Image (cartoon, rainbow over all chains, first blue to last red; front, side, top):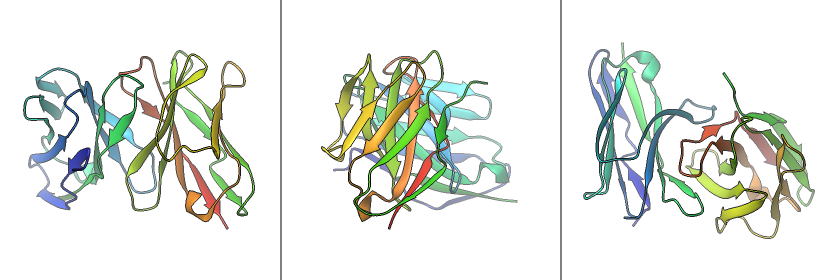
Length: 111
Length: 113
């Protein structure tokens, strides 16, 4: 079983729609959860982090965490063509601070 | 806004040569990391560093790799004898605390010929 698993996509949504990105993780001891956006040829850019069960909203982005189900998701409201990128889920289990990344979900927002 | 910087942006080297990749983390951050990303693949953790010592390293980070904080601002990754399969983007990241969000530098593209 992969440590952090994401649907590779591509996920295609029309402009203005909600994009829903999902991630599951295998280590129950994981403590911190992050969503990064990566444009082609660029470095990962942090867009959301969440540490507690429930929802966390920041502008058009909402992160959801369910530790019992080992599931974390990202919702992007009012999707824009500039949101087209690969979205990386990352999980930190504490201890030595090793952070494991999923392979990413490619999102296309059609104008 | 403070950011992580990395030099050089692109490094080309011959197989078997040593390379040093340099990073300047965000100034008030205490935790530093190196990751690599082979073209088309996922971001892979190499090593975390805190209080002048390695906190954790992955199985990729073998004896050919080393890290150092030679002064108060730089954080370096050395690959002693490069192999073709070391060709990748290498990202440095830093965070204020160990479990906190990490901020990435722009990366160094390493090409081993």
